[in-house]
Image (cartoon, rainbow, N blue to C red; front, side, top):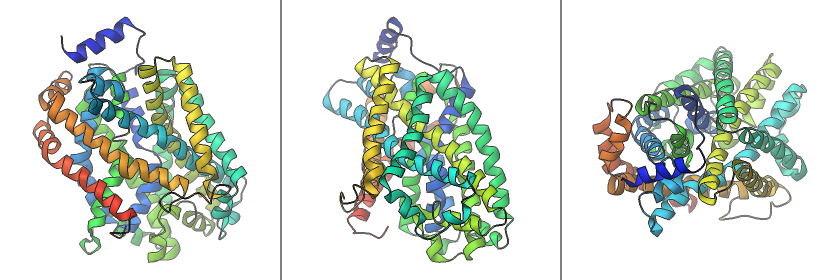
Length: 465
């Protein structure tokens, strides 16, 4: 009997594993994971900074090749083994390399969701203020800095967001994760379309639409590729253990390739809508001022409120926009936390309730430190970064490339491409099998190593990010 069959048999003898009700629940849950702050907060500011249309084109090429290959790999391995990352790697071997490969995939979401929840708390705060009609105050210089520097206030909003996430986790996979995704994803799309149309119809906004959608090869640089690759990890939930976990929840009749295509389409559509919400609005407000386009992470919390304050319908636009961002942030944070809960259930033998309490404790501990890092603990810096920025660098720039490389090695050197293909073909044709094999064997490892070393070089100042 094959090792993965042993794993499945063992699980059948023990407690029943949680599962999605069907294909739609799985697709919307994975889409909810992929569509988060990575799309609506991170994607637009990177696109604005790294050339607009040429960044978008680079991202699309990488997503359809590199991203597709890793989504299929992680999902197939999760379904094959019926385990979260640690167990999936452990199915193929118990030596130290296998344990490290599994645990690095498992630990990443445990470290991301606490600081992600801090940013989610900022979103809740802004939505609350727009509902109060504080549009002019939010646009004032220094408002955002003063807010995050107030340790007590930042902590309160972080705790509120974290409580929302943990509450959904307690409800379980079908009643919690799946149900929330089925409600929030359609609502998110509707809001995104409304805000994007509103943004694009502002005077002067069409220049922003052209900047974002039409590639200008003069804007291309090596960092365009590096930024697009890094964004792809963040946006598609690759190398976070999430797809292993969600793959373990799906049934054998779910079409992995078709589901992957749907996630690609959904994720890209939301990312493009986010770009069309934010970049045209920036052009309408500033005329495409380079300093504004290069605002980076602050684009959503500093620049966009100024845009809304200049509009006649600014308060309404602000409410809709931050409600949209909140929906995306919640669904993505739930996915990150669910991966941790699943790992605790599988590897520590804990009940779902105890696993959720443990995940909540991690969110509280690490998230509180990050939330206070701009105020009470602002004297603490790591590699010259704030605590939150350091956790972002640690997970996204260091650990995620290593985790993805571990998956590539597991697929090509241990499990074998043939076995992955067999898993996919249980429920569907594998139309991109040749491309998948070529990319996993040759191109993906090279791309991953490039991301890793470029990120390290950028932090050390060897190259300009």
